[in-house]
Length: 403
Image (tube, rainbow, N blue to C red; front, side, top):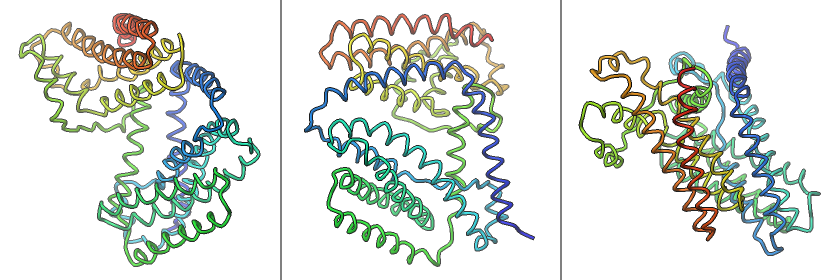
């Protein structure tokens, strides 16, 4: 006898238990101390920046653009597995309760994130607006309703197979979310908000009618669930071995010019291997780009004076720390041991690649400070970044890799 309630309970409990196990490793790491320090530093400069804002600052637009992204990105956590394509498809009509619970748990988790982001943005709104914090819970309640609408609509979109539908829906919903949020925080007339409520209802109804007789695209749902878990596994893999982590490789032909600069010689074998791995495998490159962009934005908008040097060193440390798993990326591949190359070249190659990456990041951070016209602090960021990179690679990484 099939029981969809028991299935959902077993799946959700198992997933939460798995997340809890890995989160204990993550939260016990010294990286948390660095992140807390980073958050504290950002909060200090954020408060300083808020106090300098004028009453004409377009706070409603900023909030609408940020909240709009959170509202638009509304995946439903289904806890589906690859084998479900075979065993659960025949039972699709009996899984309405299962997917409804998945939508509810998705709303709870994403609603919590929405609460945190709104709490961060409200001081900026309270400084510029005369309303202060008194509308916080009203805003939160309305945004949670809009979040539920986005989740429901995102679920309906998964009945389509055409990629163009997903793209257009993302653009349309982002425009609607941004416009509605802007009107909400601008204290627009209630009639405008009611008009938007009718637009939201009509938009959902149109997709509901079109997809009423369609079947779910199970392969897409499962692929998205696996992608989300793979992202979490990559994070957890920085702190402990994750057996379920699958390597992913992306062909980036436009980056071959960097590979071609490596000389074709025996002592450069591992240089070539680590460079290829960084540029293609497991999103090491994406991690580097994300941290560099976030660090650059933080340096430009929320840090001043010597705080810029501290912030740049924190991001260089985070980048170096999260790239250390690159060393063990090929540890389970026996053919690597067949290379007729001394192991000393492997360590030298890894240190060379890691040092080059951190040098590039240090240079980017220096240019950001230079753009602000602060050449003395830019020089401090450059020198401290280069020195820290050398110490991180030659001292910290050696101890870490030997441990």
